[in-house]
Image (cartoon, rainbow, N blue to C red; front, side):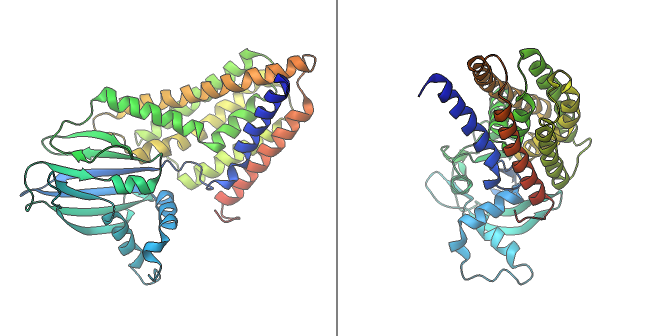
Length: 367
């Protein structure tokens, strides 16, 4: 296989893989992130609020159906009870000798502060333990998957935040939490992961640059997108202005359809930054949904926001730098002109993916 055909194959597979993102959940911003807010009480007791995105909970419930195979979830309160049991099986506190704290689920169900999230409130009585207290969320992280993350916020005397991953050991609550710099690095990584695994954002970005034959129009497109989505990402993360996630997700899908369809009628890449700037406002709310679900650290909102946004931009630039040389290589092999059939074919695939997502997100098709 020649270098040209390898590039063509890579480009085609990239687009098909992104466009066929409709095999993934309709809401493409499932971040596999849970949060744990630990509040120390008197007499070695702790209240722990465990939260996660409702779509994450649904996915984890489906993967653990054997735990409730004989349970009838239709009676009032049955689902909430099972949500509590689900978390209680996966979150624990104990001392260094392995002696477990007595756990009790106090509340489970919808997060009263966020209708798109679930919240389980647990109380741990560690009076029967000695020495250090360890917070163990490894089973919860294992259920979330290899990309799972658990942002822990500890209140009280040793207050701070830390991010736990599946490979991390139980958290020693007597040790200092992570520094601002350490947390910023983890939010930076989360930003990269979000854009690289965000099927809809990839489709949108890819459709925008298919007709680009020079670097400068791409620079303008990326810059316009960066400026506008940074504005709405900041507004939403700081709780100044937000949109319902269902509306945001539907509008993102519609933006994909628009830019993909535009490729059939216009090749004016030089002025495409204008539309990109407008649509960037919508995509910013999508980025904010992931950041919000991570639980922005108390006292560290601005550093976390900046790190996450920089991570998104780094991932976005990396994608553009990977795709543009392929497109330029194809141009060189075909006499310096963009292959119309290739652009139309890839635009058609992206448009179909956008239509599919849109119909899912407005409830016409099952998610």
